[in-house]
Figure 1 (cartoon, one colour):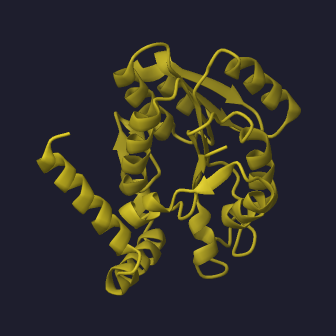
Figure 2 (cartoon, rainbow, N blue to C red):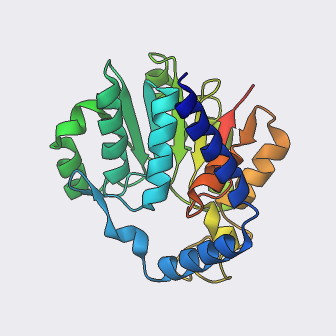
Length: 245
């Protein structure tokens, strides 16, 4: 590799590693996350015309992971308006081949389904309506994954501890070696209690608590802390799990 490129990448890695201990930067990050969640900042964006309820930083992290892993199937639980599955499908379009995104949601609203299915990226999207952990849905997923060799999973549906824990146990089996299982909204554990008074999840009952229990039991996965240190602003702190065994 060119010496200039080596120097650039080495400096980048050192800078990323140093950010974990940068107290002023960490405090600014924490304040931004708290204020931005209160203002629903993550609802402001779209991808190729579909609302994508996410932080741009997380989506950039996903782009880097997808380009590196080059999955031929991405499974995402939680569809909402379809922005993230359209985003992933567009990245797979750049990679070429027969790559697909499988989106699963307990309730895909008809108007969202119509807009997703009429989108130019729909050719790379499969939709399943049903609970991500029901026997019927899981059996459908099992039949689909048989045709793919390199699989990445994103969990972003019901955020209660019990539901996410069940998803982790089920969908961890589909992730291939050196690929990722990304658990979104682990940030809930770091927010004030009763932040989501209209939702069943809260501090002590959320994706982070499910992830922590899962990692105590399953040693095939490790948290990729480099992602956290790189992007800082994320709804998925410690949620980027790499399958290493």
